[in-house]
Every structure is written in C-alpha cells, then in structure tokens.
Amino acid sequence: MRVSSLLILFVTFVLAAALSLIAAQFTVKLVEETSEYGVREALDENKLTWAEVYADGLQVFLTGTAPSEAQRFLAISTAGKVVDAARVIDEMEIKALADLAPPRFSLEILRNERDISLIGLIPAETDREAFLKRIGKLADNSNVADLLESADYPMPDGWEDAVDYGLDALEVLKRSKVSIDANRVAITAMADSENEKNDVEARLARRAPDDLKVTFDISAPRPVITPFALRFIKDQDSSRFDSCSADTEVARARILTAAANAGLEGKSDCKIGLGVPSPNWSDAAVKAIAAVENLGGGTVTFADADITLVAREGTKQREFDRVIGELENSLPSVFALHAVLPETSTSDEGPAEFIATLSPEGLVQLRGRLNDEALSQTAVSFATARFGSARVTNSARTDDSLPGDWPVRVLTGLEALSHLSSGSITTTSELMTISGNTGEPDAKETITALFSKKLGDAERFSIDVTYLKKLDPIAGLPTADECEAQVAEILAKNKISFEPGSGTIAVDAQSILDEIAAILKKCGDLRMEIAGHTDSQGREEMNQNLSKERAQAVLNGLRERRVLTMGFTAVGYGESKPISGNDTEDGREANRRIEFKLVRPEPIIETPTTLESNEQTGAVTTEEDAEGAPSEDTNNDEN
Image (cartoon, rainbow, N blue to C red; front, side):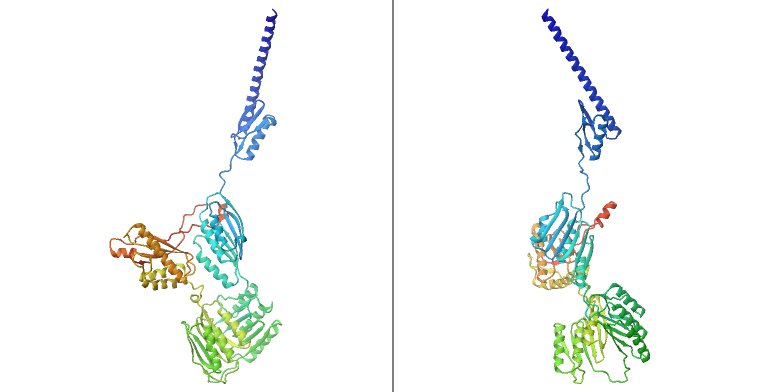
C-alpha cells in the first residue's frame, strides 16, 4: 500500500508538471504570435513592407534590407511602439548604393617652370604610369606633386583626347594651369609678351580637336612703351593714327573719341602699356588732337612729354597763333610743345634727298645723295646687316654740302625700312617719308617711336605703311586644310617613287619631298597621317610591311628636312585599300601610292543629358579619329 501511495503521488506531480509546461508553451506561443502580428501590422501601416518580423519568446527580430538608414530607423521605432523597445532585435541590412551615378572626372595641372602639381579624380583604367612618365619629361620627378585619386568607373568619351591636348598645352606653357575634363580644357597661363600670347593661342587653337571645347585665359604683361608715343594726322584725304599709346582703358577711350571728333573713321587701335610720362597723358592728347582739328589739319606727334605740332601748309598766321596759344596754356605742366607753321615753298628746285627702296624679292637699292664716301660705305654695310643676304646696290652720289644730321637721317631711314616687307624711304632735310607693305602688326607704332627718338621732337615725317596679313609670319600661316590641299596638288603632278621592292625613296623623288617639306614648314603643328599603299601582287603580309616601310621612309625624310612632325604618324595599309583595279598595269600603278591625310575627329551623335549634367560638364566632346581616310596624294613604285 505504501508503494502505491508513492506511485500515485509521483504520477500526480508528473502530470502537473506536464500540464504546466503545456500551459507555458501555449502562453509563449500566444505572446509570440501576438507580438509578430502587432509589429507586422504596424510596419504595413507605415508602408515598411520590406521588413520581415519573427518572434522568439519575448524577443522580436526585425530582418530584411532597408532602402536607407532612415527607413531602418523608422522600422525600429515603429516596432518599439508595439512592444517594449528592449525586446526589439535589429538584424536588418542597408541596401548597397550600387546605382550611384559615376563621378565627374577632372584633372587640374599646375606648372611653374619645372615644378608640377597634379590634382583631381581620374578613371582607374587610365595608364597612370605612362601619364606620369610624360609629365616627368617636363619636370624633375622629385618636383612632381601627385595628388591624384582614381575611381573604378568607365572612362568617359573624349577623356583621353582631352588629356592629350592638355599635356600638349602644358609643354608649351611653362607657367600655367590646365583644367581638364572629358568635354573641355581650360587653359590659364602667363606669357612673356603680347606677341608670345598671340602666337601660343594660335598654335594651340590649330591643334585642338574640332569637338573639344577649349578656353584660353593667357595674360601678358603690359609692354613698356619707350618712348611713349602718339602720332595723329589730319590731311585732305583722311584722319588717322600712325601711332597711339595709352596708359589705361579709360585714357584709350578718351583719345579715340577725340580722334573720331577730328574725323577719324572706322576702327583704330591704341596700345595700352607702361611708361607713360604723366597721369595726364590723355588730357594732353585730347587737347592736341582737338588743336589739329581747329587748325583744319596737320600733324601732332608725342614722344614722351615732348609734343610737336605741325600745321598744314597755308594755315593763316593769326589762326595758328590763336590755336597754339590756347593749347600751350591748357596743357599739363610736364608737357613741352613745339609748334611749326611750314613756310610756303616758292622755289622750283627740288630738295636734296636720299632714297632707299626694298623690293618684294629682298633687293635693296640706295639712290640720291650722301655726305661722303665713309657714309656711303656705312650705309651699304648697315643695309646688308639689316636685310640679310639681300643684294644691296648703291647708286647714291656724294655731296659735302648736305646738313650735319644727314647721316642720322639716312641710317634711321634704313632702320625703319627694315620693318617693311617691301617699300621705300625718302629723306630730305625737312621731311622723312616711308611707305610700303609689312607683316608686322605694330610696324607703324615702331617706326613712329624710332623717328621720334632718333630725329628729335621738331622733325617732320610721314608714314604710309599697310599691314598685310599674308606677310605676317604668324597670321599669314595657311590653314590645315590649305596645307593638305597644297601637298595634294604637288603629288597630283609628281608621284614619290621608291626603289623596286624596297622602302628606299628614289633619287629623282627627293625634289618632290623637298617641295612637300617647304609647304609643311609653313603649316606649324598638324595632325597628319602618312599612309602607304601597294597593289595586290605578292603576299599580303609582305605588302603590308612594305607599305609601312615606305610611309616611314617619307616621314623620316620630312624629319631630315626639319619639318615639325610631332603630330605625324606613318601607317601601312598594304593592298587593303585600292583606288583602282589590280588587273591592269595602270590600275596597279595607281594603287602604289603614298597619301597625306589630316587626322580629324570622328563625329558622334550626342545623347540628351540632364540639366544638372549640362551645367557640370558643358559642351560634348568626341574622341579623335586615329586613322585618316586616303587623300588625293599618290606614290609611285612596284608593290
């Protein structure tokens, strides 16, 4: 009986424990389901459907991938409002920002002589080693500060062309900042002079790919003008400046306005520079020009603070005295006025004169009178030195009655003539007259300053010099298309021939290469392909190699003739691009050729961009076409 009582008691405890466990599990399950349902319902109401919920006992776990950190925090807050926040376990992830737009690649290069700094973000696929090697040629490697970062995104169209062009500009400009992105290159630099600035801008503009947006901000120091000169003439034909200088933009505007009131028509230049003798320069110039107008004509010349005013012949003495008196009393104190009223000539005998003429071919002839044999020899030597190897003919006779300043006038006239491409200088005891054509844009100003300095402020001179763009060594350069056409014209008449089956240029073809080199030397920097072609006779691989060898031989020949070939490439096309049939001798002869072709950018279709992208990137750039198509030029030989 005792054992049975114990057994019953044990079974009772076991049953109670089992029932308690079942009740506890049911309660836990109920709590879990209630928590899950409540949290999920709250998440759905807040449109957080991406979040998943499961409960484990009293803990509520949140899983899923949140679109952003803010959404993740919102999900946690929402769950914390349904159950105790301490029960919420965060197992959510943040969505990777894989769809971010690629960054804007840009490169800024700062150069100060041999010190170079590189700043910016470049594509990871950029050949950084080759890039730094090219930079290293411009500066000691120890002087290159490399602060570039890279990003593993696709290289944008036009990036390589923009970088190549930017480095070309950096080679030319020793003090500069070159800013590069895929669509544009901005160049900020300093030049030593205005002429250098114009030259650099012209050279870089010619080398820029057609679809690359290039901006220049090249500054040059204001030139020092000495003497600070101005020369205004009003005669029966017109009103004009032979020379004009100003110290500020405001001064220039005042002077040009005064000249317009005195009859100047059209556009006229007035150089701004340093060296003005007085801050009141424009006041003096305006009053002097007005005096010439009031006299009805004449010439006024400034050489620093010295002013010479020559009235026209026939001006009445009373009117001359009145105008000159008013001018003298109104000029700033630093200026000195010398006024001349020419006497009317009554003699029929012509004055003693010396004449020097310069022909377009460079021949110089001296005529008229010289003081003595010593001056004659000096004039010939001076002319030979000034005009190079030109033939100088001396037909002047000696006359010991000439004035003492005659040698100065003769040599000054020859020096002035050296600024012309063709023309003449006539010297008398009262007047210096120079006329002709020039390729120097500032020839008038230069000659005016020379006469004022050498002859003195009281001397009279006349300058009739015409600037012709075709004579300008920079502005007169042919365009790239003109160069290509001129080379094609030569090769249309005479083909470059080679030794049979080889890449050696034939002896009788050397003169053709001379003609081509003479044209290309005038063309400056060009991007040009020299392409070799053969007929179909022989093996294809052999023809390919032979065409390449011949193109390279032509390129080497141009280099030997000192042609600038930095932008030239030699390419062999073999028999792949015939221009005639290979079934006849005439056809094969036409296919054996060398072609000169400009390398031009290949146009692409622009794709629409967002307003934000347009503001950031500017104009669209295309990659340059690396291979030119055949031109009209030809070459001669077998295969």
